[in-house]
Image 1 (cartoon, rainbow, N blue to C red):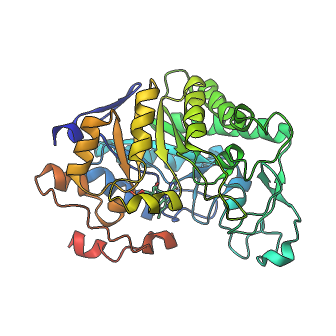
Image 2 (cartoon, rainbow, N blue to C red; image 1 turned 90 degrees about the vertical axis):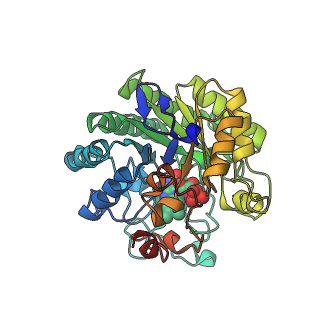
Length: 379
Ligand SMILES: Cc1cc2nc3c(=O)[nH]c(=O)nc-3n(C[C@H](O)[C@H](O)[C@H](O)COP(=O)(O)O)c2cc1C
């Protein structure tokens, strides 16, 4: 398993191994998005458990872009003081730590009493009335949240790119080893890429180049604010053909996603983190292989930057095989670390049995990432 324990180098960031804790929102931040003692404990345990790099749960860069209750925020300098203790706890325990930056948009899971939820939850009653507090590519109702965002103006989009840039500058000042721009999973930046959500007729809609413009501008703003060498990951869906609000195919294709990855690299991304949606993942599960490994190998061959592949990694032999043969730089896992924060140390110490995760979905109820297997594992 030598490959797994080789160092992972992304620009000036050198991690102790090639295993990454994929961004996982623990939903334990304060109302304002600040760090809580519980979160500090989770990150300390993860770093102590041997993982090379920890990507934080998503951190919202503007108050109206909060993706779910309990998410961390990075939109105001009053939040910075405590974040230094988060990066310290990772570094003291030998891990690198990367801040994931997001704007939620209409996929945001707002609680019923959230002041931003100006629309009733009932889809029939929404009737296309845009929610003026949430930005979108187009005023299209989200199929799951039933939120209809306001079509963002180009001035609002420029301000959003600046907010990403500022957040990256703050992340660097707080000691994060890098940032990850969240362009995946149907949040705002990935909605812009998707013809299902983006029906714009201006320079942000239509051609792939136009649909990728916002993500490219956010990346450029991050580069401008955080410096040329600072590690910037971009997490990208390999496709999003499930995200069609009408439940039909026709979103971002794999070929288009590969072109977007190249555009993001051109704009300054140091690393691409390959992901996708649950639909694509569940199709892959049938093959028994990690969900997006094939697409990850393709990108690793096409791009001149390190590629990390997220999703479905469970056993060390499979990880080693793909690290050795696919040209990828690292693999990222989320749920396996929820039940076993010490998974990497366990593997390093010679117990190479697969992750104990049973994929029951309990952790996806989000608050505090509950896990029925964890107690047994940690006993
Ligand atoms: C509880 C939970 C919270 C998550 N939060 C985030 C997040 O904040 N940002 C993100 O990009 N992905 C998030 N994900 C997705 C994971 O990063 C990962 O892409 C997905 O779970 C597949 O990897 P796995 O098979 O190793 O779990 C989350 C997943 C879970 C289970």
